[in-house]
Structure formats: C-alpha cells, structure tokens
Length: 182
Image (cartoon, rainbow, N blue to C red; front, side):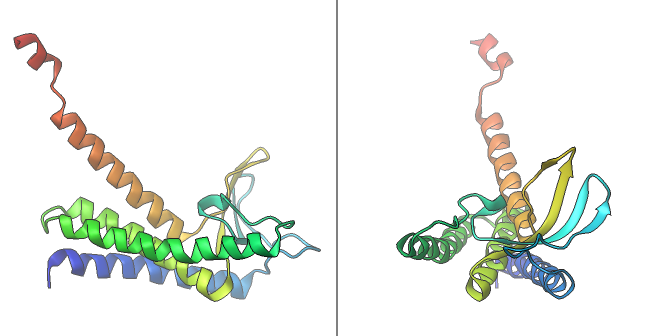
C-alpha cells in the first residue's frame, strides 16, 4: 500500500477518533440547549473560553443553519444537501490525493485532516441530524461560533493547502530581479 494512503488512514483516523470521543464526552457531561433553557457551559477561561453543548444544523460555524420557521420541504432540502455533500467532498479529496506523490507529505497531511474532519462531522449528521459543537471562544460579548475537533481538522487542512498553493504561485511568479534583467 502506498504511503499516502497509510498517512490518510492514520491522520484521518486520529481526527475522527479525537472528534467522536470529545463529542461523546460532551453528550454525557453537558446538557444541550432546549427551547426552554440555554446549553450548559463549563467556564474554562473566564471571559474568553467555554466548553458548551451546541447542536449545529448548518455548515462550519453554523453557516446555513436550519431556521425554526422552515417548511417541511425546506427541511427536507436542507437535510438532503447536508447528507449528500460530504460523500461528494470525500470523493473529491480521494481523487486529489491520487494526484499527489508520496513525497508530498504536507499536501497528504492537509487532505487527510480535511478528510478526517469531514467524516467526523458526517457521522454526527447521520446519527443525530446535526453536528455537535462545543468549543466556544468569546471576548467582551462577541462570540466566535462554536466549533469542534472535526472543524479544527478541516480548517487546518484547508489552511495548509492554501499555504502550499500560495507558495507554488510565489515560486512560479517572476521576481523583480528577473524582470530587471530583461
């Protein structure tokens, strides 16, 4: 088996395991929000960081979350979208991975992080119909949307891929010293 696929299995497996274990802990130790009460919080760093229990029906950081006034048709379209997109994304990641050489470790690690994060959140969607988020950063009344370990994997992986592409672009672009010689 090629090294890139072993790395994918190891890194994605680690992200999925950490994500699901942390969410399991949250579910057993903190009550989720209901229409009658807010979610329970553990204040980890007063005025800056809480551990909470949030049900996210949208994408990363609550983008495209399902509203309370949605019709049944809108709910069904929302559910179809959020259950069909992750498998498509996973197939795209696997297709991209095929183009990487075993020597391109940074790219393989980045794709593996995204893959693991996508699977971790997809497991929640299949099991619960929403994703469990619990990391809540805030400052002076301003809250960053809650997120989870899978989201960290996705954002880190995408960040690495963006850095790698920017580095390739910088290498390919002629420098000013090259232009002065012309």
